[in-house]
Length: 418
Image (cartoon, rainbow, N blue to C red):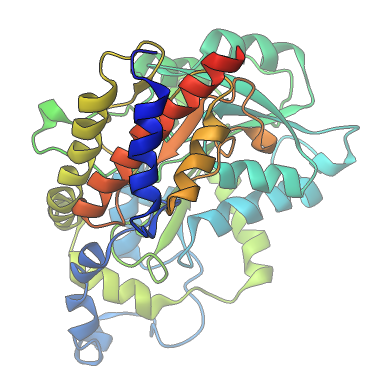
């Protein structure tokens, strides 16, 4: 450690005395991002009600409006008939799909809950709410390392080929949470091709950030190949569930969510969802459809989001680069999209870093949250969520974070725990 601990302590004390109250715990859109969709609320929908048949004010329409099914189909790289649009939360769709599989099974198998145990592969670092669903329902989670091309497919293929209790895998395939990694074409193909001991194995493909580029131009954006095509090509047509929403496109609490799958899976889902509800909120669906118009309209809208959040990501990288670029053992992701930056610090120091930030009034995502059961085996990963705060607050928060990293490292170096 090149920086003297006493100098760091002096800097740290200044931050403690500043009375900061900065929150970087979750990936929320800022007020300015939400404002981009305010015009949706001002559009009079009553004048265009007659164009929708059947009447969107009434019951029915379990699959969602045809225009939105077409829009989501392009987002998900599937056919419109594969899409079910409903509700505002893709997390709810994932939760309910897991629950139905546990209680009723999926095509190709019986209820997962009747097995001696049910296990899921969890690429890590990953999304804590995926892990929370598994933990809530007693599904055993098996961490899988993330690589620059997606989950470690050698490990995935080996495990699913021999263990019938492994029923699924969580994947955020594009601009992953938190690493910003996009699955390569080879990874997608291997997911569709691999042999699984469980006939009812399912890929939960949470494409939350499919349109969330930070930069303009295809050459500056990650590209994702079709999971549906890979599964069909290798004769595993029912292997996938794809999820997406407009939560970080329009309004986080009042957007539109959708899922897609094979005809057999969709038929089974419709049968079960039809018992749960008589139909989704088609008025909100119409509001979104008229605001975006079509898929290209949504893409244009997302370029406005990029203009707002790109400087925030650049600020994180700038400050960390100034403070930590030449510090061995500390590294962070530089994603081309998504909502997060993944930071790796020295082993056995991440929890201490988050504690030090907290004591200065800077709230970070809890250390360990990016791993199943909240247990990071190296205690080294921290998720940075830069979208919500103002850019000047991000600059200050990153100074506090950098100081805390160096302090935690110096303290651990003194005690020999690094």
